[in-house]
Image 1: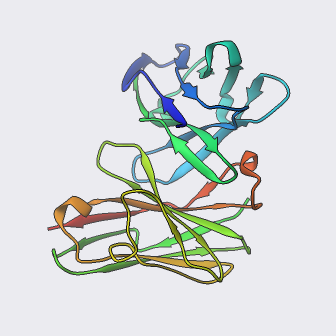
Image 2: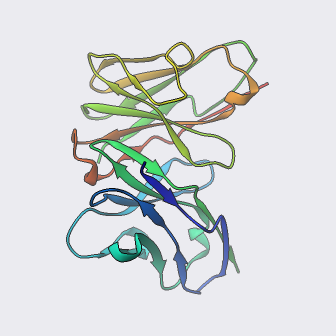
Image 3: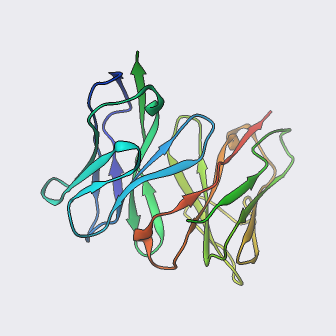
Length: 112
Length: 117
């Protein structure tokens, strides 16, 4: 069965520091991969997605992610975080034609 | 991308009662999805709602507990029936703009935060 693992439940970084959030997936075919962000009390916002082509994808808010098939990973990165980036981040994989399977989420805290 | 209006945004309900959550989309979509996010947990798909047919439920979710309506291509409701404290969660609706084209990504409503007391 398809699955997504986000190994880090909670990450704390200082404002201005770089960020990498890990995501590993298990999927039998070429996956469709997504990163979503959920701010407190808000719904989910799509940061970026990958389904083919260039393995380095750019998203909104200065985020990028790299698809590495050999490692079954789709890690999210940002070179310099801002206090407003504090939120919950979810990695998801497209399952079949329609469904999304989500990882457990990583809560990001930003130290001033 | 589609804009979703979800109501209510939050509610506190007595156990044994039912709550109906509404999801309105500003454009016609074929498929609408309902997710549950339990406290501190990730999102779990409850069911997929297609217009003109019965919803398709995931393992562990049943129609008697979570009846879904989909009267047209822009609207759906999810009812949480005979609630217990374990139903306290955030419920989110989601749409995919193109049927079978997952790679376009999904849009989510802002969610309904339900507390059952």
